[in-house]
Image 1 (cartoon, rainbow, N blue to C red):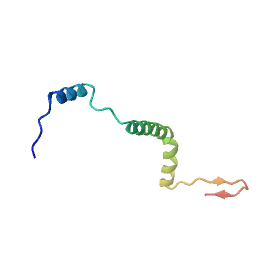
Image 2: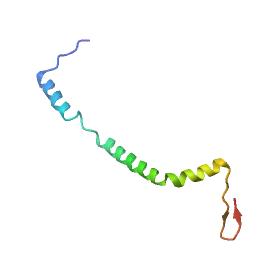
Image 3: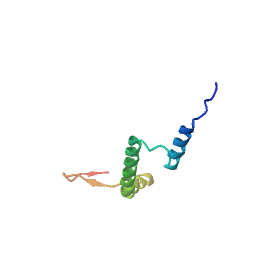
Image 4: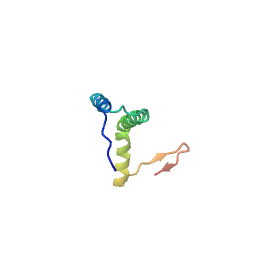
Length: 74
């Protein structure tokens, strides 16, 4: 399989594109990146309120909750 030589025009286009940082990122990729950033920020905001109950359960601590009719649930 022979390789075709790259034309001067293609070399110039490649160099010009390289100076711009390569190909632009696709729109779906940008949407996913923004979604991931937003999700990460939301998780980090709520992380402490999630971790403490998980640690309590892991340590065997139980929380009693009273229902509207006065019964206690563990």
